[in-house]
Image 1 (cartoon, helix red, strand yellow):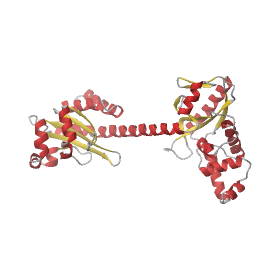
Image 2 (tube, helix red, strand yellow; image 1 turned 135 degrees about the horizontal axis):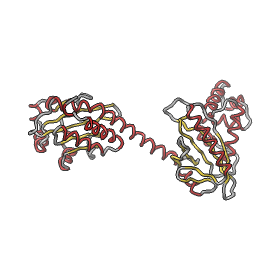
Image 3 (tube, rainbow, N blue to C red; image 1 turned 30 degrees about the vertical axis):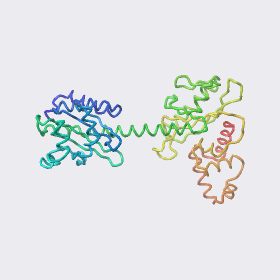
Image 4 (cartoon, rainbow, N blue to C red; image 1 turned 90 degrees about the horizontal axis):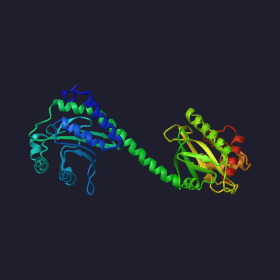
Amino acid sequence: MTALLHEPQELSQLLLLLYEGALDPGRWREFLELVGRRLKANYATLVLRSPAIGESGLLYNWGAQPEGTAAYTGRYFALDPFVGLPEGQVVTLHEFVGKERLEQSEFYREYMQPVDSIYNLGVDLREPGRYYVRFRVCRSGRTGEFGPDARRFCELLTPHLRAAIRIHVELDLARTARGIYADAMDDLTLATIILDEDARVVHSNALAQQILAERDGIALTDTTLVFRDREDAQRYREAVARALEAGRTGRPGMVEVIRVQRSSGKGHFGMIIRPGWSRLREPQTPMAGSVAVFLSAEPGERDASTASVRKLFGLTEKEAQLALSLANGHTLQEFADEFDMSLNTARAHLRAIYAKIGVDRQAKLVRVILKSVAALG
């Protein structure tokens, strides 16, 4: 191991800060400081998003003065010749550009010399369509060029830097997706609640929050759904347990419907419980540790729209139409004739419905649909 990393404790601290930065990028400044001091540098920088006209980009640095950083992001970044390095390869500025060409450049005369960042060591990490990260360490002209030990030091850190960046990018994408998902949930016309593997509420849309806040037979205490009626509570716990078991085993879970008595005496709520799902897994495969709960807010009507059935069971438009047609007493052949399709095509739609809802016979399907209609009633 390079002489620059003779202490395991020091290496552990560096890597810890690097990986913590994936969650809290502010920790990367502490990482840059440790690297900069170890390499006898006066500046260290990590560029996650390049500056552009009208915006300063996203970079973390150690050692640089605010005015120097402002000048670099505002003007000199575009003139910097130390860009486009071979991916994952640690190189010095002088070997990449050449001493004569560098010292003749405007960037060297107007920026590097005034801030005394004559010697530079860096590595570029790229994954097309995901990130282009630049890591740079700069030394004063008095300190001298980076030697083999400094290069080896950065080479040892490079795979860990790459892993930390990948984690950060994945987390950032997940946060973005979660925000979009939360917005989409709020647009649903059904009260929707998502439970985790411990049956704790991890998300609810605006309509669900409104119903729970009314405490009309069902409410939210901390992260747990509580019921006024003990029998309702027992049926809910059993149904959720079965949904979670379906998720853990990867088997299609039965969509279950229960009724929840309202304290106000205004009838009941219809609650539909089904295993969660994920687009990252195989089609029709539940996602372990997730349960979706749909709660009807206005009982009374005995009819359900195609749109409601689609949302409840994740069906296509044609599948929802077929399910409702069968529930209304029509045969498969009658449905095929009505929609001008072959009987084989109708059967294919029916098989898809079975897989999504978790039933294996038409009679069971009809019962599930009728219960759902009544629950949403």
